[in-house]
Length: 568
Image (cartoon, rainbow, N blue to C red; front, top):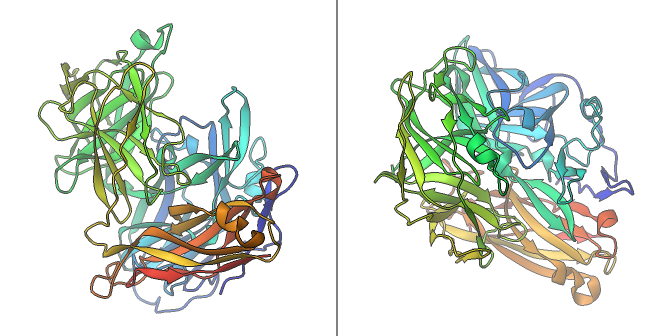
């Protein structure tokens, strides 16, 4: 059993561990298990190849900087292995690497985090282990200019236009953030991977007794750089960017392709548009005859779609990329309206996609937003563009000719769909403009398990305070693979029984059964960890603690499990 680590806030507002933690700094590659950081096991005498890992990112226009600090890279042959399983190949970086994810969009990427020499074979899971925002400040975080206050940090501008700094909460960072895929290592070869943090969707701002706070709900993706290409383009926003009221801005572009069942378009890669109107999509998965439909949108701007844009494997941002058009694409203004959810979702940490169908085709994903995991709704009312959509076809060496289409969902209409890991896609119906100044309240769909999931299970147990009423506010947070799955407000529980706590039960957790176990071999995919985010309402900034619950809950073959914790 792992030791519980208490974490709190100093008077300066910095998250610190109450016990010092030391870490090895030597470069270590180990095929080992159970958290070992050195030594080797298994047969490594056969043929081998290399895996190199870099980081890229999607757009994050809401934040000035988003810093993370990477300590280790783990690789495993099973997608079902959890952090405590044996068989991990672990690379401990010579020194932690601190990166601003905001600088890794528009074709930019980090240097090689590490090169792992691995036995030939197929690997199905990578984990990135970050230094916790509450760990002692690493030398790499201190080396930034200006020096960071936290290993994982968000720099942003508040509602009053003032620059602010806040920790990016990485709870149970030692478990790593999981990425599942198929990674083939060949004899003498090098597999070049770019792992994407999509902080535009995965960084979540929430309110903590009126204060801004940030957490991460990462869904990592990866790209084989040897099988990728580049797409570039430029927009002209003068026509709508200089409007005296509500000028357009915050433009993004998404390369979309058909889903596996061809029922909707999914995003393969997206990025923000630079201040000068240019954009670069790289890396984009490429292959013979591969094309994408590009969706461009912005605040107070008419949505635009360019169909059938080709991408060629081996092209780079500065070397023969596909250019979307000869001239800059002219953006036009459009009105907006706002939406939110009438009631919280369960589980809370899910995504909402807003789709539009134009020209008799398949629905395009226009906007995506993650629910606030502590409320199950959007933190702020969410804007959608009203009006028609402009659609044109790619012309090699020329410009698309656009036509205006009213979506099949109606004028300015969208189909809202809720999705998440282990959750069946839930159609929440069509939403459209409710009138000036009206935020449309969407009916929240009942979420059901996905086809491969036997049921939505639960974790129960007790939360006890040895010091009565030390904490009177808090949330229980359940995680899987480093990402939040569901949360529960435990404030009433902490105040019960004279402030000593009591019993809880939290549901909405994808689970397996003996007949239908989770994962490819029924081992590990349903492993959940939990922590408490607790504070005292009299001094919320100074008393906040992130408290890991001991042990783990295994819902691979059952719909219920138990976790208990005692707060001193």
